[in-house]
Amino acid sequence: MPISRKIAIILVFFAQTAFGQLAAPTPVGEHSLVNWMTIEEAMTKYQTQPRPIIMDFYTDWCGWCKRMMATSYSDPGLSSYINAYFYPVKFDAEGKDTVEYLGQKYMPTSMQPRTTHPLAAKLLQNKLMYPSTLFLNGYDKEKKEFKLSMLAAGYLETQKLEPILIFSLENAFRNSN
Image 1 (cartoon, rainbow, N blue to C red):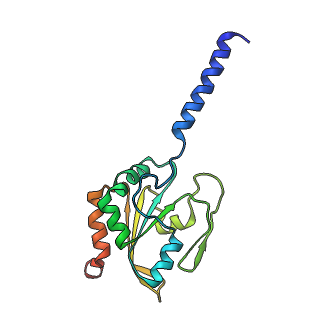
Image 2: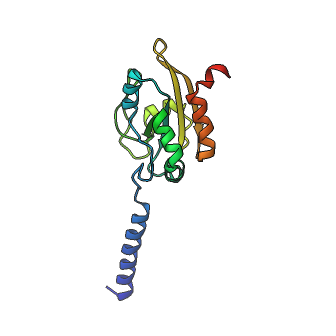
Image 3: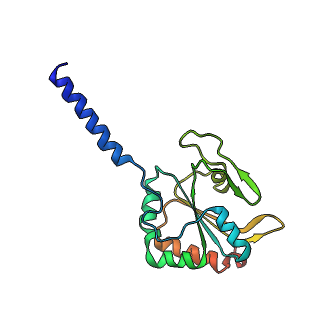
């Protein structure tokens, strides 16, 4: 084997190794100060002590999701407010877990990567943009739905997230359209 071919193979190997490390997914919540829980945990807690739910939809490949985790959700004031007054849920929109929500089970339709989880498709109304944040409040047991279900698609910096949290918490949705 000629030396130039050996050098090319070695360069390709090092390039794959270097790019593989750069592309490795960062654990979700690594920089967050928010105490995230599953939707099942939030709904169980909601039964005994109702609080608004903030649901963050993310994917492993989403750079803006990671940025929001490292900025907005790592802000000490905002995260302590969320932890004190909300049930914060982190939901992998391409996750492979079976999830129960409002008495119905949602199972992944495929084990292939980048397949949208059925619960994410339902709650995001098939508007699959990441990150997306869903605000839920005022659960109606008879209708099995939340009176407030407000979706904010895209990256939300702290200054944009704060008024939405206050609106959701203070039940302002009951007095406005």
